[in-house]
Length: 73
Image (cartoon, rainbow, N blue to C red; front, side, top):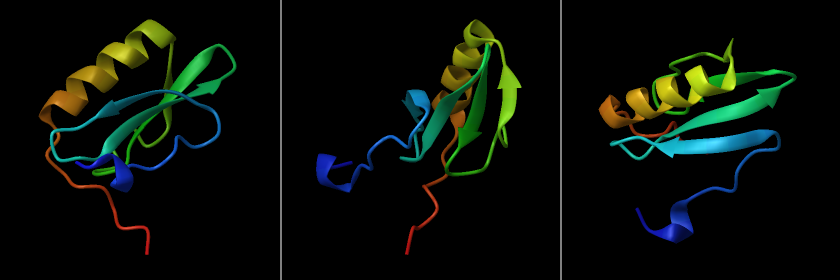
């Protein structure tokens, strides 16, 4: 995907994994935990995990998810 179509990271996002379909799996800091959410399919729906588990989960999901990101307009 061209760099011009990528969005800036939302406030609080500490890591981002790109899915095969071009969506993002964002990890947002929440105290000692990290919230996970895929912008394509909604995976994670903001569920909180400890950081090592959140990164593993996000990476695994990103490698399999083929959904495109939801349109913003």
